[in-house]
Image (cartoon, rainbow, N blue to C red; front, top):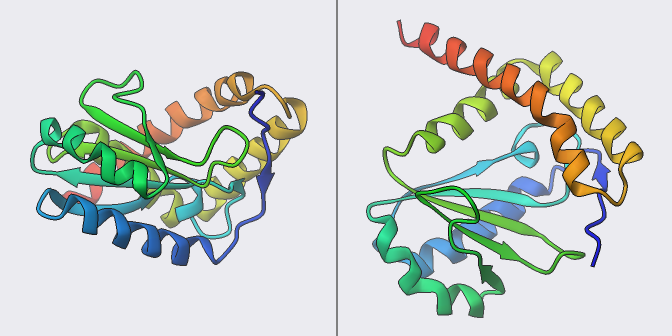
Length: 175
């Protein structure tokens, strides 16, 4: 099945959907979560996005997360292992045509946690960058409506540059 690429204008309801889903996930993982974060474009106000809520869960021990696969399945998630990112556990809610949530689980201290949070916080603090990101995603979605790989590749250069800026911004704010 082809994954459609549909980017829509920001929906203020996304933060509510995140909170509802985060609560359910935290109840399953019980003692493992350190923190649950809303990441990705749906976490950035006024930013167009694919209507998929990205949730980052920091845990004490990543190796224990596979023990919760059955409970996550009952909640509607498909366990995807690390899905190509060592040190991560990835879960998808829905199927390729009806995805609603992605859950990225990392052990506290994994650099991916800082990367995702820095990107989100930088984009929130720099709305002009967020608008440029929205325009890029909208353009790529029009160009590649049935080619998720080309859509993702089209964002790579922008994301790499924003990651660089976000890291620099975060480091300068610590001083």
